[in-house]
View 1: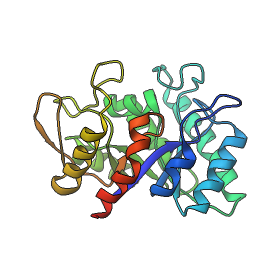
View 2 (view 1 turned 180 degrees about the vertical axis):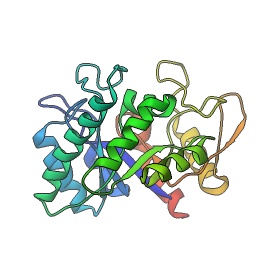
View 3 (view 1 turned 120 degrees about the horizontal axis):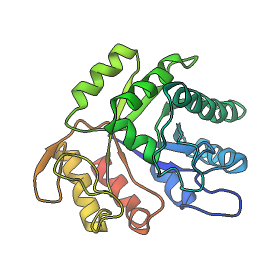
View 4 (view 1 turned 45 degrees about the vertical axis):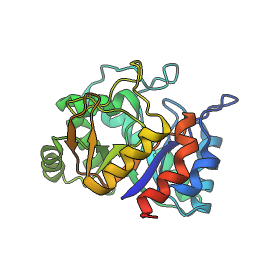
Length: 243
């Protein structure tokens, strides 16, 4: 089971996250591509840091919503979604190639990620974007109880999938993430470590009301923009390694 984090989300003089503190512990870095956060210098520096720590790199594309940090849904056509993804992925991949690095996967950000999980037309457009990119890239999406359906959709589109769970987020009874705006949406350190241990040992999480939700998980996400995630990253790494 891998560990991933969304990084490279600073923009100009505005700083987001603690990338340098997180990078030594993760396997996969999902790097912002400029539409919700990130700028060319931040993208370049994050790629350099990932290379230093031998971390796989992924593109973290979003809706064109830098004011709202990509957390607001937008109504885009299929063609607009495809073009937005190709534009962002190509930008990061070109910068990666300039450092001799290869892009490994794509993980949508924020509202685009949640819309992908909730809306079949958005998910189909993202599958189309992945399938029509000039070379194969793996798509990372949330593991839910519909994982078999999503895997079949990916197979039909010719897109390989990685399923992720979240270390620091609380789950609702339907397997979705409790919205950040609700109390208890972000786990404390103890709950975070317990959730990672449960994922590792039982391939499941416990929902807000106490239900067990079985999940197919390839990678676990920890966020570098909240203090609990930063303070717990070394312990999470040790849990995933079985130490």
